[in-house]
Amino acid sequence: MTVNDLPLKDPDAVWPSLEELLAETHVVSIPLNTKFRGVRHREAAIFLGGNRPSEFSPFLEYHVPEAATWLAAALNYGYGPAVEQTRPTVPVNATVPAIQPEEIPELITRYGNPDQLHTVKVKVAERGENLATDIARVRTVRDLLPHAKVRIDANEGYSVAAALELLTEIANVELEYAEQPVAGIEDLARLREQLRARGIDTLIAADEAVRKSADPLRVAQLGAADLIVVKAQPLGGIRRARAIITEAGLPAVISSALDTGVGINMGAALAASLPELPFACGLATGALYVDDILTTASAESLYAVPGRLAPTEIAVDPEKLRQYAAAPEREQFWRERIRACFSQLLATGEN
Ligand SMILES: [Mg+2]
View (cartoon, helix red, strand yellow):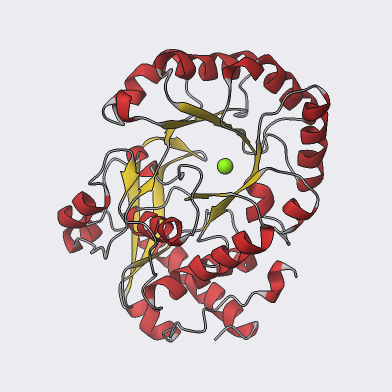
């Protein structure tokens, strides 16, 4: 089976017409605490016309065919049936971006009580950074939080040689896993093989190789990773993500693409629906937002348990939608994008 055998439209969802969708679309731009992919605001289109709020927020540089899959996810979730849950809450990891090691203690306080930080993801391999800073960042987190699981994410930023050097250097840190240290499925497989040849058993996670590949299932077929990172939006939604996890036969880490609370709730619903959830989810990125668009009651319910998320039927605060409404030209950009992606889905027979 390839991923293209999985339809983008959930057969149980009743998608609206483009006009109906656009009539209930709100484009927001929410300030972030930190720079993410070069920006300090996160833009998202929020759909309010369905059974529940849903979010369409592909990264700005993504073109139509890729972004259309994200739109399918938002339509399937917003206009589809409720997702059955096998657990009430899901564990989530904290994230340390590629900041200087001395900035880390302050950042960690934003996640609340450090004793409740069970899992931390450290970003490494940022452009313009060097291996020594990456190693120092990982060691700083390890020392500050000796009881926590520490994972790293390189976002494809290393060469095989650099990844090998780093993972050898920090082999004694006992990483939970190393996420997408190098680009592409073949290089992941090569790196993993060379690590094992050196007797280093650090687990390798595939993220971009799953999200961007024409066929995410090749990751499992080539033995390129020990686990896969799965995001509901880029894979076309909850049902499709679940099918890919089942087919891959590897443990999955459910994560988000720095979504607003609306997208986070969808990710949490996916995680809560899985039969097994061996790793904490990358869904605590709300901490990187200055504010969110959920009602206070929804946010309190979603974030009720420290270090965990409780997916729920959320509501969006109309006042926040007004406060964070995107500038007219950005709103126009997103409406055009929705139009183009919707046409793409129609053209491929997904409606
Ligand atoms: Mg990642």
